[in-house]
Amino acid sequence: MSRYVRHIGAVALATTLILGAGGQAFAAKPRPEASGSRATKTIAMKDDLFKPKTVTVARGTTIKWVNRGESAHTTTSRKTGLWDRTLSSGQSYSRKFKRAGTFRYFCKFHDGMVGKIVVT
Image (cartoon, rainbow, N blue to C red; front, top):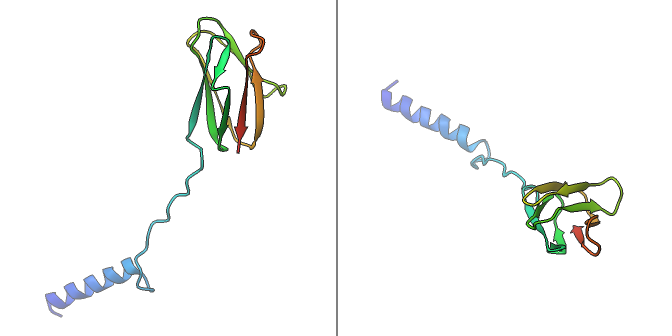
């Protein structure tokens, strides 16, 4: 068998392996994007308010509270036991929201300092 024929045979075999039996190239399966899985939304705590006061995010989004004020604040869930963190000036706290719903929270130290997270 000539060198040329062996080369053509090798190319044909490689093409068959790459294209597969149906004649279509194999494509890597695209990875499904986990909606919101890497998304982060920041809420500032300053001057006795949360800013923004209400946020709407997709499931899997991480909420990050950052105390940008001079006094301590809390981010405390209205539903007992979900979360309750005290943050001094410059500190932050993050929590990932995995299920849909409305989550209301407040600051224990400042009356009227309230917020709401809507997870879709």
